[in-house]
Image (cartoon, rainbow, N blue to C red; front, side, top):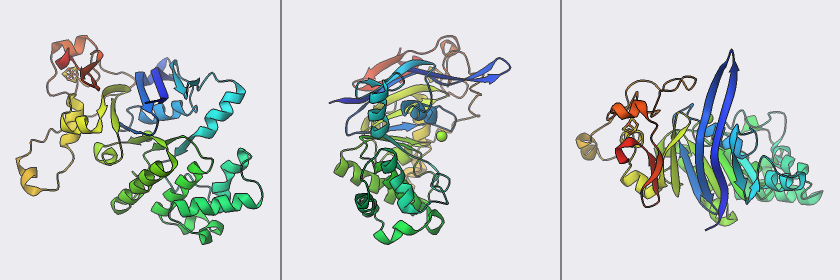
Length: 317
Ligand code: SF4
Ligand code: MG
C-alpha cells in the first residue's frame, strides 16, 4: 500500500523563556497509508495535537521531517506547497469556536473554494449545496449562521468545509470530544461513509481509546511527547503490550455488568508529569505499575514486539 504521510523522527520543542523548553513531540515516527484511518491517542498534553499541527504545516519541526505524497511539507517549493495545502485539510475539536459567527454557512464552506480559485460563480453555490447534502444537511441551511445549529450540525459544517476542496488527507483533531455522546457515533459514521465515497485518508486524534475504536485501522498511543505503542486496531485492543495502553484500555467500561465485575481494572495512579521536566529513562515510569530499576536509567527502544506491532518498553527488550 502507498504511504501517503510519512512522519520521520519528528521532534517539536517550544521555547518557554527563562531557559525553559517543552518537548511536545520527541522523535515520533509513523506512516499513514492511503485510504486508512490512523488513530492517534493520548491524554491532553501528550503531543498528539502538536504532531497533527506539524503535519499540516502550522508548526515547523525542531528536527525530523514530514512527507506528504513524497513531498517534504516544510521544505516544499511554492508550487508543491499549493498541492500540499489543498490536499491536507483539518477538522477541529470545537465546532462552536471554529466557525466564524459572522459568516453564513455558504461563505464558510465556500471560503476554501475561493482561496483555491475553485468552482467560480454559480458553480460555487452548487458545490456548497452538494457538500451540505453530502454531510446530511440541506440547501436551505446555506444562508443561515453558525449559532442557528446544534453542536453535531456545526461539526457537519466543519466537515463540509474541510472536504470542499477535495482533499486526499484530513486531520481530525478530537472531532467528537466536544459533542454529546448521542451525537458522537453519528459523526463517526458520517466520517466513515465519506471516507469510503471520497477515498479519504484520516488522522483521527482523540484522548481515549473508546473514541477511535470504530474508525481506526491502526492506532498510535502517545504519552508525554513519545509514541509508546502502535499497531492495528485489532491487535491493540486484543493484546496491548505497553503498560500505558493496557491501563487506558482497562479504563473503558464494558457494557456487560457480569464481565465488568470480574474485570481487573488498572487505574493509572498519579498525574502526568510536567513535559518541561520529564522523567529520566521511560517517560511512563512514574505511573507504571511494573516499572523496574532499568526504567529510570535507560530510555526503552522503539521496536517491533510482534508482527506490525511496535512498542517502547523494557519488558520486551
Ligand atoms: Fe513501565 Fe518500564 Fe515499560 Fe516504561 S519501560 S512502561 S516504566 S515497564
Ligand atoms: Mg489537543
